[in-house]
Image (tube, rainbow, N blue to C red; front, side, top):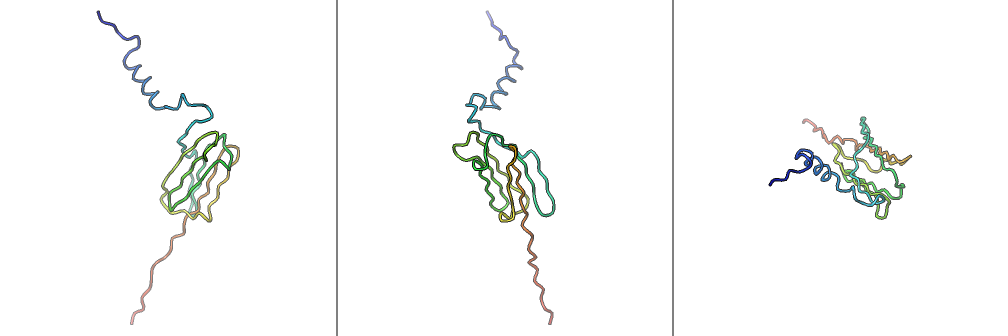
Length: 126
């Protein structure tokens, strides 16, 4: 005697694949971990502007790090929600001229580009 499963194989694969994609479904609601992506990315000649939806955390609970052309965003330990993001931008960032603003659960990073330095030296012809 053979038993056939009650759900078709294709449906079982979809259910298992969905469970594998979202392993945090069973996490506590106040400890969800989110790999954050920018909701908006803009660029002009002087800066990059990245916007992130980070509801549930205050500005004291967010950490933004800049190293060369790499930007990292994470939530501090003990924050009600956990966010993580890192990206490499095509140009180095001037951290001194950059700014971050959190308003209504939206973090906006205005990252100033490092101005290219002209390293051309003219030689005197004798």
